[in-house]
Length: 219
Image (cartoon, rainbow, N blue to C red):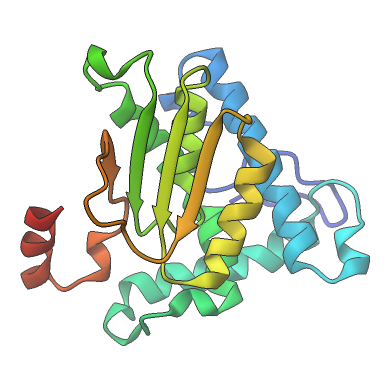
């Protein structure tokens, strides 16, 4: 993640070696500026939402901020790997896991979604789209779709059962999207609703392997 000197403001991108990993994937300047904008929104949201008021008012992103939130990223990474079998269903109720996901997973997931969108057929360009995001978490898919289709009318439905991470998603969306893009984070899919695109980022990892194929067929 990096090691700024004590008391310095943190100015590098969040995550591990982003200059070499994420920004290397984003060769064009528009993508770099989009990621930088999202990074700033994430840092502001993390500080104002999860830090005590006197800490939230400190300008910039400091060594103490990084140390505070990096602990959550470490806990979540361990829980999703070594402790996956013991992870409770509503693990996003734990604020350290929510902040860990925001600081560690949102930016790389944004780039993955963008790369998927680049492969869309031409007939989906230039017209209104309705998009589903199953297991939306903090709303990364919605953010990426909004940035990728800046001029197209969008109607996005993020389906997420955890109300705590949904609050993060709604807060990030309000800071990000233009008015002609609509997004709702709700509890479950709407029956018989016609859609143009469906995403399931990290959705299948929440289920054991024997259920994943059945779920993919249903989707």
